[in-house]
Image (tube, rainbow, N blue to C red):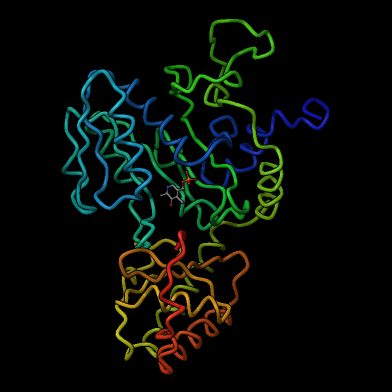
Length: 349
Ligand SMILES: *Cc1c(COP(=O)(O)O)cnc(C)c1O
């Protein structure tokens, strides 16, 4: 079946399905590995494409795995590379003639705040740097236009808004202009031009395929591939409008129902500055999220005090938000979160 059902080609064929969701050309995207591994590959490629520069600019408070991967890669390099972690509103000012790459997550996992991808990519280019975007909280939730924004490289997650299921494979994007200019360092056999020649030396495959490493996880790929069929022919602008409307409803329900319980609003109210989530903070956030899960409303807790409510415009109903807010209100009014079992911490929060 690797031949007959074309299992071996899934990284590229599933990639072609995913490409239009993030504004990539069909040959600019591949599905493979995890987001963290792909970030390592793309960051190493970016540094290779800017050999005379020695600064990576990223955001203080970026998703921890992204920060850890940046540091891990820098620890391997022969040339010293400085990691500059700037505040979210100081990023453009942190770029200079030493910057090799601006490495950012488009939508912040805690607050849902969304960066101006076009503006920041242009600022990176003006400084002579590349722009690498992590689309973990954007892909499948809104239209993303990597090529329109002029992005150089990107990575993203298959198990969030793309619905690929637990641990689904991730994706990577390399703008066509860079594809033959460098080689990411995880040169496994499936990135080889002719893997089944079994030759001793690596020779990169043409195009995006040189960014693959090893054998694809076929069962997980098949699930992601099927999930992507749900997006076929979908108007992504309509998806975004639904997401914005869900957000607006959640804000007004918050104002109406939850004002008196000690929450603070963490997400920007302005649609243009927000991805597809609404986050609140509360000193007892952990316990509240656990009590909510028991009531059938599954959110996320993010340390130290954030309650994150994801808005999945593909299938969430307005009514679901009313039910969720009612459940929060009941838990707060009855102080049900005080039950000791809700304070027990699992490994995954
Ligand atoms: C979820 C997420 C990841 C996930 O990385 P994995 O390697 O797939 O575990 C990476 N980056 C961001 C910004 C995320 O939100």
